[in-house]
Length: 140
Image (cartoon, rainbow, N blue to C red):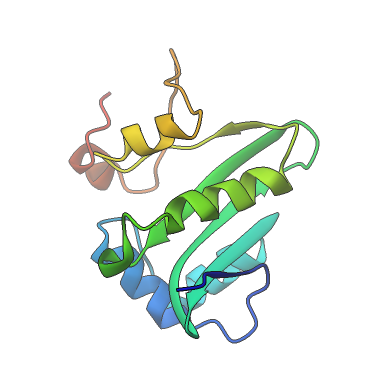
């Protein structure tokens, strides 16, 4: 089946975005929150098969030398079919020349490693919900 990558959010079902993030165990919010976040991003990409959204991702960047990937998600029934790889490669092409950071969902580190990402020696985060931060394995 052919995979179509779309770089604009026209016609996106934001409830499906929220539901997909929930289904894959990632942070999710109300659909309107995701719509605002994607709109404010440097690059957004949505993957469709036969007209159905099967994945999405976004990048924040200054477009010069720094970027971060967020919300890389593929619906569970379509995982392990190269969709996540296509999404990440599409984002990386749009932020070429930039250092790129991300934090991976637990268990997905090998996937990102296969795309050239490496662990950082240092990294810190400040989350708005400290309990959720602890729940996800971030230490003090």
